[in-house]
Image (cartoon, rainbow, N blue to C red; front, side, top):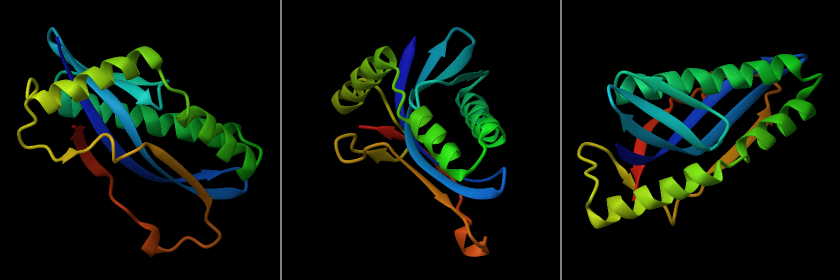
Length: 154
């Protein structure tokens, strides 16, 4: 079983009850190859996981799961303030056991025990997870942003 520590950045426009929100996060996820599948375990946010037959499919499933959580929160929230609190609470839930494994995997990347060929490396000491939740008063095309592909933490 191999563990890979990843950063990821997602940007979403979410429509709720009387609001449109811009949600941007840089989070952490632990990729684990287990038998014939790959798992992506959320570290921060820690409440989600997804699997796929390879790394790309597992990450895609993780992305869909995350987006579904945002949509569910938007549907349940009475207003933007409640939605923002729910997103921040969800994002700040850290799975401590998975975080320890993520930290160990970061050290393995630094030692060269885990190869990260083809992936950008970001220093884990310099990149801290964050969440931004803003209300959009007047949506414009300038707010469009592509997700950053995952980068291995080093």
